[in-house]
Length: 540
Image 1 (cartoon, rainbow, N blue to C red):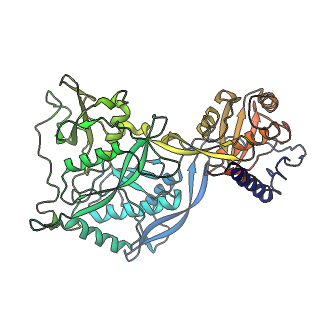
Image 2: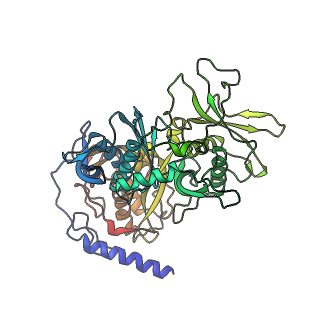
Image 3: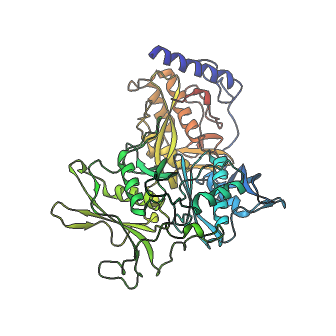
């Protein structure tokens, strides 16, 4: 098996050499480096404040007859640190260029932020909620199609004021790009949601299946990671039933496959200690002693009269503003013997993000723990909202480390804060900090060796501190690394280049030392920008 892996890596390297033979970053065979280049008089681009990159995006608008979503190509600008998804949604808000297309996102909605987490994208709006349900459903469908075209992410949640509004007080769930024509999709939604089967006694219960976004964590257990999953339950399930179902799925863990298997945040020994209760939180200026106004019964979830509501009826009132009442869940938990050492901050984050992302109209979650002596310990003063955990959501980025033979670069997925996932300085810092899994890390270099990173016109400029060239030469001659000495320069330089060029707005990398140009360290000439060598990469 090991010989087979080596053969695959060698074949991948050989292909890379053939494809890149004429490129500046090319290699002629397994051990040779790019041919010696004359010293260049070119200088790296200067950092330009506010400079934007651009890309061509397919934005989905409504056809003139209103029957379908139609793609229109736009060239969009987006700054360093921003995702293509955010730029694309902003493009939707700007509207179509063709007079034959209509806007797909209604006026009055303003984009607050876009949050990426592995295979899920969360889009947050504020402003004025649309008067008709058709407008909201259309916007969701257009956003799902547009985000998929821009990022390849096929799972989207759309929030208003941090709340999942739902449809007729039932969950909408996580949306994938719609395959039906728009008018067919809207008609199917009306049929699926407006009519609740009223089966005769003794007949089988009717069930429905929706996509939901659950939040787990990775091996570092420092950030939440989103995962789309299916939930199946009775169509007349109560909000408390949904809480119990989601809770059990969070404990069961990730059902995904492949390299990104996630770990449950909730320990196996934790359980719900009392029936979940839903309240309307009192006005913030006039709270009762325990933080609640007079309890209000949970709203009727479509059992009486919901099927009589026409499609044009607005959704339930949007998330309340400050000073109004908020709809919250009171959740009481009990730890078991297997719950020792639970990270309560991460637990609260996973529960809040998952439950508010699925249960319609839910503003927040109030979480308490029943102690062994029977007393109750509340984990927050009032309740947790999604905004409390904006910095807790992680996004996967790819870093490239060499294998022990120095033949190929291996792609390792690292979970970083979603808000910083498109920051080139963070990518480089993560690469240098290790650990490499898979691959061999670069222990000789750390973030302290970097003066700065900026991007200008597609070029990422990495400014190393004074002494970089000498330190790199020492690494090439050292005895600590298992990588053959003649391969270390190539692996280190292209590990940095391929990592930074994995950012969509970076096409090449130019390395400097203390602001000055570099020459050849061993064989590679660093006086020019270098493009990535994708053939050196073995995706495992």
